[in-house]
Image: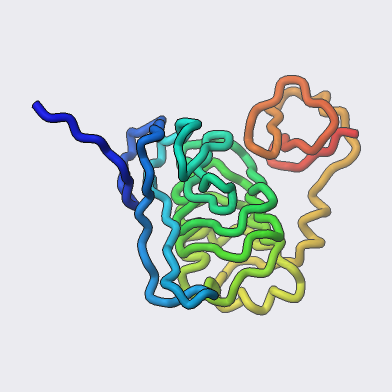
Amino acid sequence: DETYAVRGMSCPAFSNCSTLTKVRIPSSIEKLIHIPLADTDRTGALSPNYMNPFTGCTALESIEVDEDNPIMKSVGGILFSMDGTKLYAYPGGKKAESYVVPEGVTWIGACAFDSNGYLGSLELPESVFYIGGYAFTGCALGALVIRGIIDGSCINQYLFRGLNESAKLYVQASEMDRYKDLFPGTILPLEDYHSGIQTPTSLQDQSHPIYNLNGQRIAQPKKGIYIQNGKKRVIK
């Protein structure tokens, strides 16, 4: 006969809830408890492991957050910190062929893209300098694009642990040697990835669905970059 107010959520609070399809985080959740790492960050303080609270939730299609929540927000069903600099969780059941992480994101949390079997390509912007361990484990990625320079503290055996070995990793040419001992698959310079863009096109072929870069299906595309049949296409 008592009522309890839930004020916080630990990571990974909902690990392996394989039948969970949607979740809404209320405004009352004021704390997301992460796992402290043994090493220190640039300020000399303990560095938290910003971890996905929904690891192994393979049916989870969307994470919603109350607009009054003080610490988190949802953008297209993806869980971010309120200031948009940290990506905590990309739903394991989100059905999108590609995703481009927004510019301004600096941290990709541990297990952030855990167990998503739909993403074919994932692009990280230049602003990203931190990637947590196991961020891509269990993903069916065909292409992972890292445009920025990742902090040396992330360059370890856990960075690509569990990533599909048939995936192609695209990085700056000057960074290729850093990853050779960590990823057994193909490592290519960023320039090679740009060649996959087809332009211009009218996208008249409607036999394959069309998506924007956030993975949302588009019925009538206007000017911009889209994904169709796993390839980038540009409408001018």
